[in-house]
Image: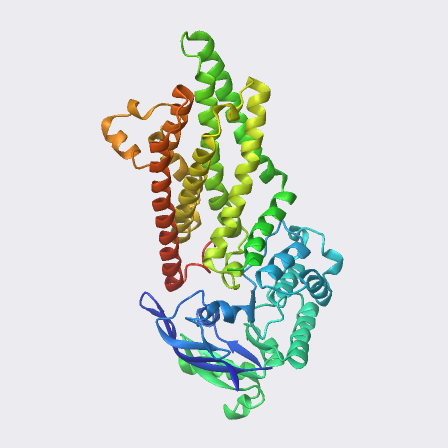
Amino acid sequence: MPILKVRNLTKRFGDVYALNGVSLELSRGEILGILGPNGAGKTTLIHCLLGIIVAIEGTIKVFGKDMSTSRGDILKRMNFAASYVLLPLSLTPYENLMVYALMYDVERPRQRCIEVLKLFDLYDLKDRPARRLSSGQMMRLCLAKAVINEPEILLLDEPTAGLDPEISVRTRKLFRYLRDEKGLAVIYTSHNLHEIEEISDRIILINKGEIVAEGRVKDLPERYAVRNLEEFYFKLLKNEH
Amino acid sequence: MSTKRIFAITLRHAYLYRRSLPRLLEIFYWPTLDLILWGFVTLYLQRSSVGLPKYVSFFLGALILWDILFRSQQGISVSFLEDMWSRNLVNIFVSPLRLSEYIIGLIVLSILKVVIAFSVMSCLAGLFYSFSIFKVGIGLIPLILNLVATGWGIGIFTIGLILRFGQETEVLAWAVGFLIMPFSAVFYPVDVLPPVLQKIAQFIPSAHVFEGMRSIINNAEFPTDHLLWASSLNCIFIFSAVWFFAAIYRIALRRGIIPKIGE
């Protein structure tokens, strides 16, 4: 049973279609990887799913509710992190998390902040202003904010950009753990094919605002007669051009 | 409406001010400088002019009241800019926070800033020039509330403009308030303005407040007419500003402005 259903989503900026008839579904406990070159429409899709960009056509239903009419209720059960969105640098990790714990109506916010700080190895840095964190620590803080409300759906737009490989691996492990233990569903965009292949259950390839391929990670290479995801990616984009 | 979410907005900025000495000083710095500068000008005028004993009340009273309007407006527009500068707006607008809760959160901040600035200026005016704003009387309170409301209207209107036109228009956060200053007749009566400007001033709520203040100081009369005008105009101002901001927000959602703002 999908918890997120997108039908025929279309968004145009001027004459350019950022999304053109995109339809997709996401089930509880599923990690959906979204691949595509720069300008393909990945970020616009994420922003539409969050309701900060309104599509010109199509519907988004989350938890059976329409995004256009029940955005507030839906967003309580979702969260988001991206490499291009920061948190206030003058605030400490604890303060940043506390603000968002309140914003998401989290019960026992102090306790939850501490839990999340520990989960992302930020507890020892909890009282240090965020401007004194490394870029990797800052990204972990953004990810910590993204799970503060124990979301059922998490939208991550290139979340590991700027993270060193070791932390990247640990972060992906953590999201797999949250998927397995809490049934977290994730939409994950990245330029890193290896990363997408490793973390995703299913992949969607977007180009020029349209879905050009979709399938389970293990089925795609066989279906497209390629050896791995990298070949699949370049083969499809080449065909598109 | 969630008080928790409104408190979150206020707390975010309270944390910011607690940790940032320059921002904290900014609340005190300009009011203090203004007060010192205008205070000495006022003393000079008072000593060199005969028959104008109310200079101190006029100028310092007007200065303190103008600062109330300015701080009230800044409490909204600069707080919005802080979220824009920290590239945090997307996080805020993808949370369950409603637009109305965000605006109320900014209004609470604006009240806090006004209370701090008003307290500092009142104390300094008493300390340096033996002037007490409270001597003007209890009639001043509804006038002050009206100035705060005018500041909210201007502040909400300004953040609408910044949201629509982006970071390059951030200077509006300081400029828009001053745009109404000449029509507000802060330091002079409305009747010194040319007739056309007098007509405009009639529709500026702050002009009625300052006229009201002078009426209290000069004639010890409660300025009922000015108060009614100011209150009615403020209702229209605030309603229009909120409507404008909500309309701009809808445009921003359609045009995909929010994720790009601050870039």
